[in-house]
Length: 153
Image 1: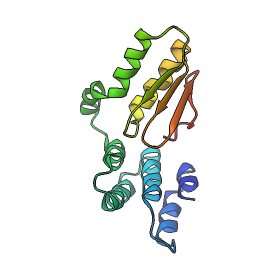
Image 2: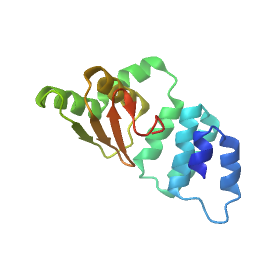
Image 3: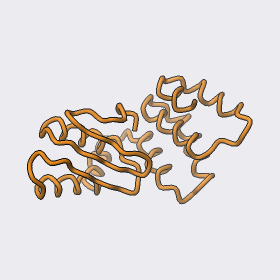
Image 4: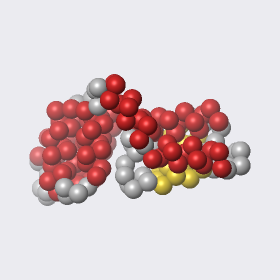
């Protein structure tokens, strides 16, 4: 339910639903809300969701990555950090070491960031390559400049 409300931008309703749940919210609930805050630009609610997600499991890297994506407003820092993303290096390596037209497969143990997601979409569209990216929570299938997650990563 949180995922559906979040996708439609109804973040206040999602927050209310969480508060009124008869059971404690799981990490999936908080992660869904945090992802929706990134998509719809709500850093205040994103902070609450991140704090609750981190409280459930402080070693969950996805909470920190998602929250940093919500907060990323400093373009200079963001541009500098783009060079440090291993999935882009893996993509570049795969592009130069695989036959043209073959499907590329990239696996990572953290959630994919929005910038890398955009790069994979762009590459799949420009080069006409199918790319499968497995991050910590889902498979993304890129083809023709689109992703199977409909940009709700």
